[in-house]
Image 1 (cartoon, rainbow, N blue to C red):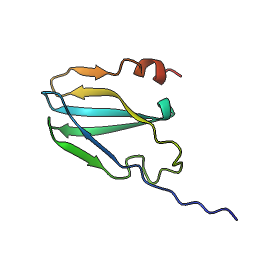
Image 2: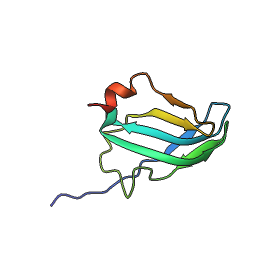
Image 3: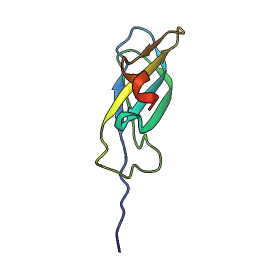
Image 4: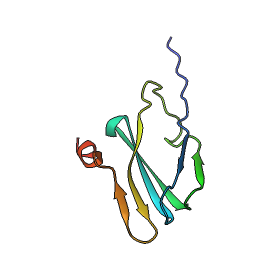
Amino acid sequence: MVGFTPSTLDLSFVNNGNVAATKVTFLLDGGARRIEDRGTFAPGVTIKREDAAGIGYNDLSRENVTVSEVDFADGTSWHAPEASNVASR
């Protein structure tokens, strides 16, 4: 019998911009999974999310998390230079 213990993926991030962010998109493992966090994220405030991947993240070997896109309250957005290449895979 093989046991399975899901783990959680906890994220923390800081908006380093000058305008509140409204959506932050994370890519896990080079785009294998996408997580969107929506809200109002003030500049300079650390945001912490417990179990950001959902009920449990079941593969501890997949730890590569990058920010691919940020939408701001003023209607502007930021896109990681390589994010469009990764997301299209």
